[in-house]
Amino acid sequence: MKGRPGNCQTDPSESMKLRLVNGGSRCAGRLEIHYKGDWGTVNSYDWDLPDAAVVCRQLDCGAALKAPIGAHFGKGSGPVVTWNVHCHGSEAVLQECESYPWDHYCTSHDYDAGVICAGSRSRLVGGKNRCSGRVEVLHRD
Image (cartoon, rainbow, N blue to C red; front, side, top):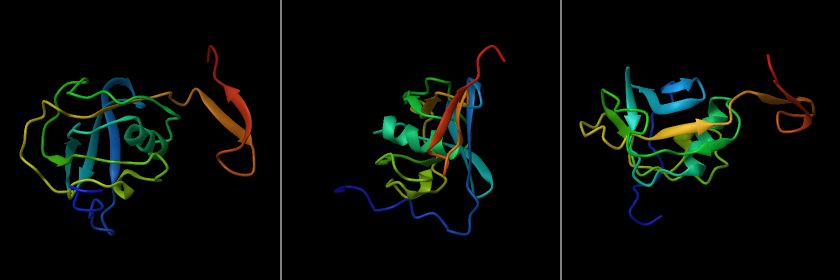
């Protein structure tokens, strides 16, 4: 894509951790990434539902429902890890998506990206893989 410096350019040996905070559950909130020893955020410039879908899949939180922008879940702290993320929605993990190089950027948290996933209230059971099987829904615990 024109204007992007390629893939995320993360260190393949770096263990990536993602979390969603301030959303009321582990499957909704401001996206935070543990990168090079610090928790940071993602700028929501160009953030959309396919980007959120990858995060939801990576966190095993079901389908993506929304991709809130503009620090919808409050401003984070620490570095901004990347921005201008462009996922097709089929990537297994966020670091496979195109974006500006991952680093520790000192910039405003006014545009931190958020994610709202369907959650783990449903699951597929008895299929040949995690994408097939009988649907079970959690209802009243």
